[in-house]
Length: 101
Image 1 (cartoon, rainbow, N blue to C red):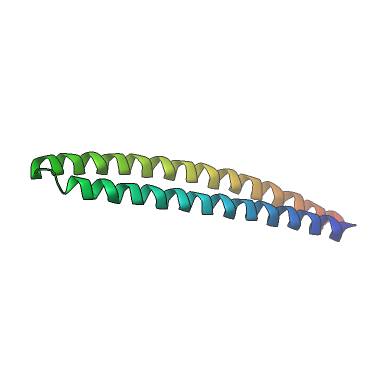
Image 2: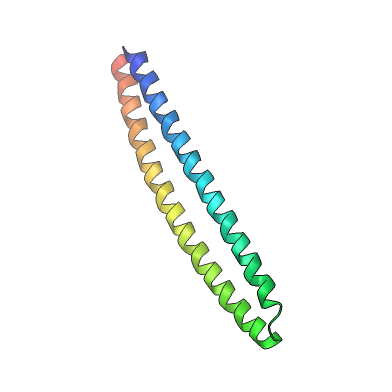
């Protein structure tokens, strides 16, 4: 019974990890699309005057950094949430192992 419980929990974790991997793949696809859009915008800016190119470049960089910052905050929140969950699971497993002994 105890081993079956652990097995079920491991399967749940595997399923969660697979879902996370799928979400990350989707994120990568979205980033790839965004990069392609930025490349198109970059090619268009090459046709502008140097002053406008600099201003546009600065605006693009500010936007990029802001988005990157938001993405990192989101990632940090997800990692912290996952860490809490894993610590909680570890406590439960440790208790079960102690009870089992």
